[in-house]
Amino acid sequence: MSYIIDRRLNDKHKSTVNRQRFLRRYRKHIRDAVNDAVNRRSIQDMEQGERISIPQKDLSEPIFHHGQGGQRSIVHPGNREFNQGDRFKRPEGGGGQGSGDGDASDQGEGEDEFAFQIDKQEFLNFLFEDLELPNLVKRHLEGAQVFKTRHGGIVSQGMPAKINIVRSMRQASMRRRALTAATRKRIRDLKNERDALLKEDQSPQRQARLQELEELILKLERRVERIPYLDTLDLRFNHHVKEPVPVSRAVMFCIMDVSGSMNQNMKDLAKRFFLLLYLFLQRNYDQIEVVFIRHHTSAKEVTEEEFFYSRETGGTIVSSALKLTRDIINERYPVDQWNIYAAQASDGDNWNDDSPACAKLIEEELLPKLQYFSYVEVMPRAHQALWDHYQMIMERHPAAFSMAQIDEPGEIYPVFRRLFKKRMEDA
Image (cartoon, rainbow, N blue to C red; front, side, top):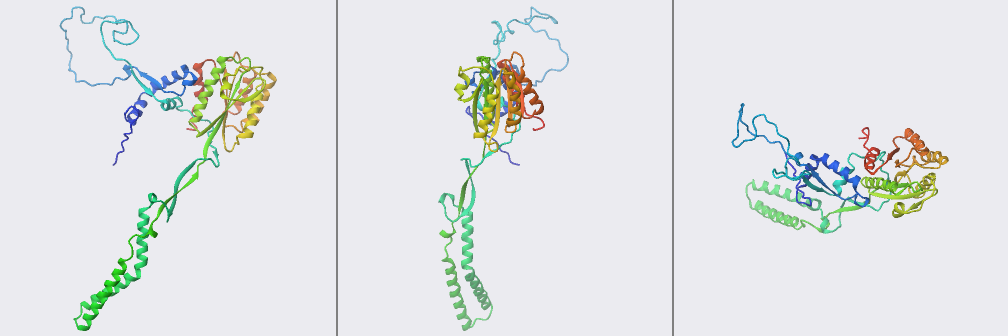
């Protein structure tokens, strides 16, 4: 039986396998810390690592001691205050443990909580643990400019660094056998004749014939030895070819309502949700593009800076953004080459006559082209017609459409996990 020991070192010169074992052991503490970090962090700090603190009581290990058996009653010397069975109050300020939030104490000692740092990759691993993209079908881009090198066989010409020693020696052996086959057969026949003469009585005629056979055998053996052991023609080289690799890629449409009813707090909630979705897609696709669409009475494609910080506002016609999304998909993102996702954030306020048109547009023209459509209603006063029409879509297409309500920043991550939780039937 053989054992493989992984002794790769991380940045802090501790073995990776031990660190992974430590992370698995205290997974609950790390998950709680990551969830808290998501709620309190700003957008710019979302991809950074996190400092994790573990209470000292959770780090304690059970220890077995050899104790004295039987029942014993002991009175320790110097005890003038307490008798057997007396009770006393717990000291204030954490019992004088020397750490914590309690008041100062003139006695006791203890240890601080154990703290360690997780990097960006580990933070994202815990952030998106047990999540998956619904209806994940990785469509591929043909002719992508990404290549991989594979073995393309054996060739007779190439660089010395790619020489194939085994195939070269095999070729040399085959060449020598082919060129010397007739000569070696002749040598075997002459040796058989010589051995037969040696068994007979030696006469002058036989002595002369033996001398002639020895000279002929020596001549033929020299001819065989003159065949080079390895010739330039024998060299064989490994051949490697580059072939294009299909690259899975996705596009995410971020659709945000910027009408007069959407204040800056609502836009910040939408931004946090879009950021989580973007980071999540990055972990599933090699290439990811983001299309930002903002709308009031009209919709337009904008940059990320303008998407979140532009002060332009107006009324609300949601269908304008959905129509623009449809047109951009038809022009730039073929459904057979792209995985298309859409996320919409709004306060639900819409022109009443426009809500049925939005539902029809999503159900008939967008959902057949999308992998997943998620709608988030931020800080609504009361559900309006848009929510009611979207709810009917979700009832008819639960696998491709989802919706949720967010009232405060602390609800963003739980809502995100609920929308993208791993389905047991797909696991």
